[in-house]
Length: 85
Image 1 (tube, rainbow, N blue to C red):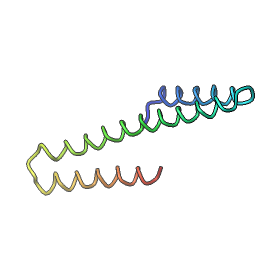
Image 2 (image 1 turned 45 degrees about the vertical axis):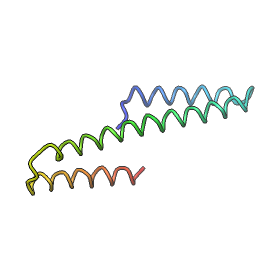
Image 3 (image 1 turned 180 degrees about the vertical axis):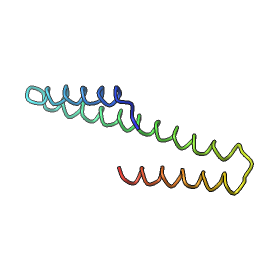
């Protein structure tokens, strides 16, 4: 989940983009494109790190059935969260 201060920063940037539309519509759309690209990059980074955490939880351990069961459950939760977006 994104940290609240980061989400608020993105929302503030969006508000600024909307505020420029009336006087400079093309610039507003270009800024919106950049903002969405920045948000996608941050979300991608966040999800890659979360996936790496799940991977590390089982890859460095003895492959007991219980450890693997927990890892699979964590992957399922992560997978479901990704699909719900």
